[in-house]
Image (cartoon, rainbow, N blue to C red):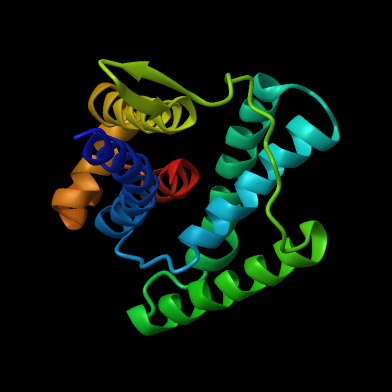
Length: 196
C-alpha cells in the first residue's frame, strides 16, 4: 500500500507539470487560435532563469520566483509581438512553423548559455520525506503539487475576476462577437501570451 501511495504522489507531481504546460497550450489555442510548439522550451528557459537568479546570483528563491514570473510574461509578450502578431490572419501552418522555429531557437540558446546538465535549484525545503501512517511521502513532490494548484487557482481567478479575463473568455467562445462588442484584440492576445 505504501508503494502505491508513493507512486500516486509521484504521478500527481509529474502530472502537475504536464497539466501546467497543457493549460498554457490550451489557453493560447482557445483564445488566439495559434498553436504554440515552443511551450516546453519557454518553460525550460524560465526554469533556468529561476536557477540563474536564485542560485548563481544568489537572490534567494522568492526574488528568483518574482524575476522568473516577470521574465515569463515578458517572453510571452515578445513572442506575441514579434512572431504571432505579424502572422495574424495567416494560415495556421505558418504559425506552427514559426513556433517550431522558436522552439529550436530557445532549446539551442538555453543549452548554449546554461549547458545541458541538471542544475540543483536549492529551494528552502527540508530534504527527504515525512511519514504519515507509515507511508513515506517526498516533501519536494508535495510542494510541486501545491505550486501547480496555486497557479491553476490564480489563473482561474484572473479569468473569472478581471476585465482581461472576461475578454479572453469572450475570445475563446466567439472571436467575432468579442470584436463586435469592443474587446481589444491586441490586448487580449498580448495578455494571453504573457500569462501562458
